[in-house]
Length: 212
Image (spheres, rainbow, N blue to C red):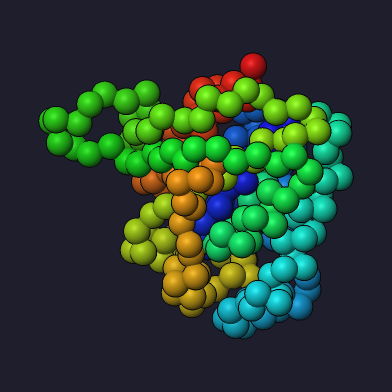
């Protein structure tokens, strides 16, 4: 059982990548917005940043969903901003959740000295070689979608019908604690295409045996 959590600030493409990855793998997909309370959504729509007290019940609801499918041997894909380490600790606190080495994937440089990579816009450091997790010990992989502030702002300005206004981007960027070396995380540059990002995630899962 594998839990892939697409993380990052608003506008980074978590839902778009999550839906594409779910379609490619045939795994169920759940968006973190589904787990927010009405009160949380109202605050964000008014450009009021959420507090930890607002976020903890939301994070627990996501964790409860993961626990609900544990034992079914059903892998899943979720989105969650997961901006702080302690938030991620809650998400991977289901029984037997594992962590591994961190790896990172970034947009390739245009320099002629840049070595060839598996994916045209990404490079990746060695991934964890852990074997697939059993249904009682799901492997949780965080995927950090990273982009420049200018790119994120442009995406948010083009997005319509969402309760997260662009004003909250500053707060989220200030809050973000990027995963540390002991967290099982793949970092991907959002300048890559959705297909390339999906391929990078699948490559990571294949490398650590999670798709075998």
